[in-house]
Length: 421
Image 1 (cartoon, one colour):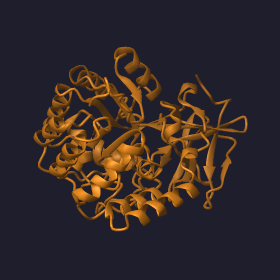
Image 2 (cartoon, rainbow, N blue to C red):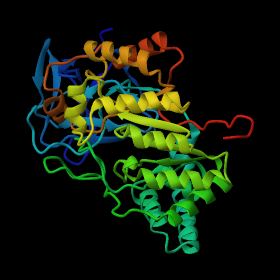
Image 3 (tube, rainbow, N blue to C red):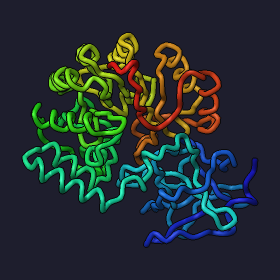
Image 4 (cartoon, rainbow, N blue to C red):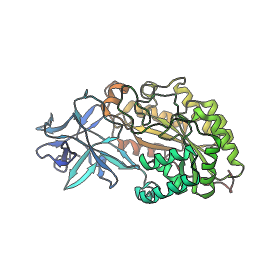
């Protein structure tokens, strides 16, 4: 459906003030294609979303059926809250603008009848992840109380930092004593992701947070786990957080934590967010009692995967093997799919991804908006012309072809069977 008479382009001034620009027809980007947005690709802007403008770049729009650069204002974008999947990128130039933009999920934004619409679709509503569930005053009080009771616990101090400064909800849940709680264990990683949020890559922009820099002791971790499992509602301890590297590099520590906790807390859930690079170590964790796993991917095409993750001492076949082992041991398996409009939903990627799903049979696909400068990703990782069928259509197609696979954004709590692990 042509939306020329329904929506308007939004741009920003240098202070971040957003305004409409009449006389132009709006455009968006899908992969390397610049096109008009479709109605089913838009949704009213969520309250928790916020605006961002792209410095040193210019908006692209349609005028007299030609794509033209706009010299008034900067491209406007929106950063989405959790639970929303981006469908289109902002249309802007130049392609070679430097430096690369900070690590955010830049989403196209428009106006219609004085209301703001974003290029996104809601994919999972869950009150557990609503900002209203994390009041800052209460959180600050709980952090102070917990740190006063355990002042020498460095891991707890790190979680307090993540919860208060980086607004990490899983870290905050440790202090609220509920739901999925973070437990970082690994300061090192065996991949050098283009979009790493905890460690600055030489050629990239500064990471939005600082990676923690120590290996915690068993005692530090066990105190956190035991408190969470004994007090929390629907307790999950989750390894592999945004402040750390690859958790399986501390697999022996995780193994001992699971074994020593299971004796007294059979109902608590252990989850690991991982790149899936160490199948032999992961098998030990599965035997110890890991309940669920979330494996991160940006693509099932090895060249695109390698270009983004830049793995060291592992290959994509190791990731496949970890997935297979997780299913063999009966874990709840999620894919942490880093989505990028025009790449994720491109014809070739979709065909290969559907074949991948047929073989791997995950229980859940957690959709994540890939936080990276769009042109950095296209030029440094993809390196070819791409366009997509549309993320909205792509999601509907997965639901149709794979009705048993859930689509969402969050790690679920697994109800214990018969009260046992």
